[in-house]
Image (tube, rainbow, N blue to C red; front, side, top):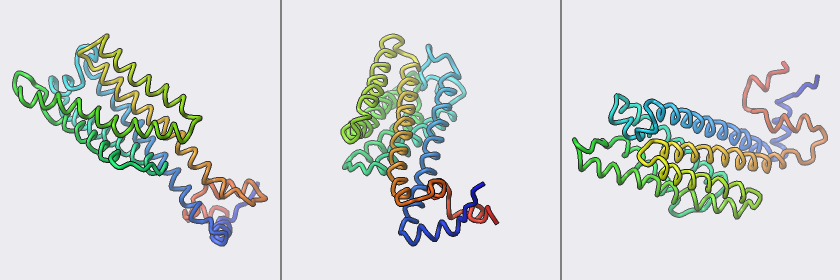
Length: 249
C-alpha cells in the first residue's frame, strides 16, 4: 500500500507555488457539495409542502393560507428562495460572469418570493393584500428569469457543448409551466413545476460547471507529476487538515 507523506506533499506544493491552487480546489469541492446539498433539501421541501394538500385543487398559496401551514409556507419560501439565490450567485462567481443587474434581479426575485409567502392570500378577508400578493407572485418569476436566463444563454455561448442541454432544460421549464397552466389552471401543479424544474436545472448547472472548473484547476496540479497517485492525493486531500497530514504517523 502506497504511503503518502502529506507534510512533504504540502511543502512541495508550496515550493512550486501550487499550494494556493490546491486550497482553491479544495474550497471549490466544498462549495459544490454545500450548494448541491442546499438545492436538494429545497427540492425535497418543495415536494413535501406541495403535497400537504391536494395540489390539483389548491395552489401553494392556498395550502399556506387556507390551512394550518402558514409558518411552513413562509419557511419554505425562505429556504427555496435562499437556495436558488446562493446557487445562482455562486455560479456567477465561479464562471466569472460579468453582469451589471443580474445579481440585483436575483435578489429581487427572492425578496418577492418571501414577500408572497408573508402577505396573506385571503381575498375575502384582505382584498388589497390579496392583490399585492398576486403581484409579488408574478414579479418573483419575472426577476428570477431576468437574472437566470441571460446567464444560461451566456454559458451556452461560452460552452457550446452545453448549448443543446441548456436549451432543452429551458424548453422543459417553459413548455411544462405553460402546459400546467392550460391543463390545470388554478392549482399548485404549475408552481410545483416551476420551482422543481428550476431547482433541478440549477443542480445540473452546479454539477457540470463546478466539475469543469475543478478539472481545469486539477490540470495545473497534474503537470510535471511522475506519480499519478501522489498527484491525485494533492487534488483530493485537504492538506490543511491535521488528521490527514498525520494519517501515516
